[in-house]
Length: 163
Image 1 (cartoon, rainbow, N blue to C red):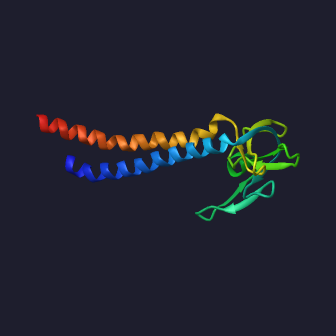
Image 2: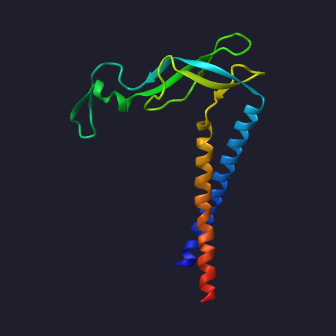
């Protein structure tokens, strides 16, 4: 059983290294951007919605050929929301930032949002919140978890040699 675990542990270790490296690179890029960026306050000016339903009710056939209807009660599961933030950096021009699509929106029109913008390219901005680091931290955590299987395998091998 231990020998069959070796190639899997090695493969997980490699994927773990890739995930860990990706997380570290993402954190580096965020910090590099913020090192020369300036803070600005933006405001959610609108929220774009995208989805398959352009009518209040939509009739379709399911995979068994039965006719189904969906309406406004299905909207939370079929639409994606993308808050659009308008901000005015030091150059005085209006710029917009799309915060990203989601199946739910945590922002409302009129909400104030803290941003960082590139002083050399005011159209380039990112959220100033700590959650900008969440994807990178997820990559690092998953990478460490995957790499741990290699160390578990080595510990099992060491214990087997001692007994």
